[in-house]
Figure (cartoon, rainbow, N blue to C red):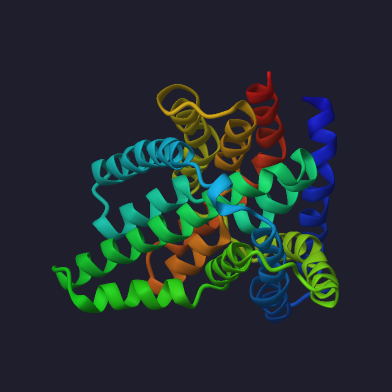
Length: 308
């Protein structure tokens, strides 16, 4: 536990540095937004493309892993939704809260951290988790919100989903990398060096951006935020663990990676969705703040538990 904590501490220290820089106004909210855009559209995309281009998708794809992960997500999603509806909130707010309960910071925090912790063998399982989050749950929230507002399903909803997926640089970079890998074309040395240099900025840039964005988050609706934090940091890895260890058992290394990914704090893109649709951004903001702070201890604890 102590060894894992010390190995993850530098990642959270960079998040703390970004938080401090924004709190003392060394970085403005506008500057933070531009750093995030640079990481999202350029650095992280370069890193994901290089990772995916070196994967053999036929070997990496694991239907049992996806099934086990989806089982855990579905259970926690249902729990969070049920609790929200019992509190008599509207369907859209319940969907946003459920999104907080199952969508972790896999791209900005999990992928670079677990590659360093577990080695490059973790890339395959992490790419599957990231793709599942982006494709399944990004689509689901759009369907629920638009259906609740329009009172029906329409072709326009499917168009919105399709365009959202096509415009997501993480999906595009993973897809392009897998296509490159399928063609079995070696990456030219200048391109590989370019991707290495640009992708190298993803980890520190993403972590710093996470911290800086947290400085602008509010801690309103504390009880709800605490419940959503519990869902994300405790229930999500627990039920994903049941899925990949008992119901759809996979190899121990992949299971460790997937369960650890489920233990990550609430992703920042959930706040972007909440803000875009005008649905409970304050409680999402607080859930991100709480879960990120507590994950400094909870992530090493979950990793130690699974490895033990």
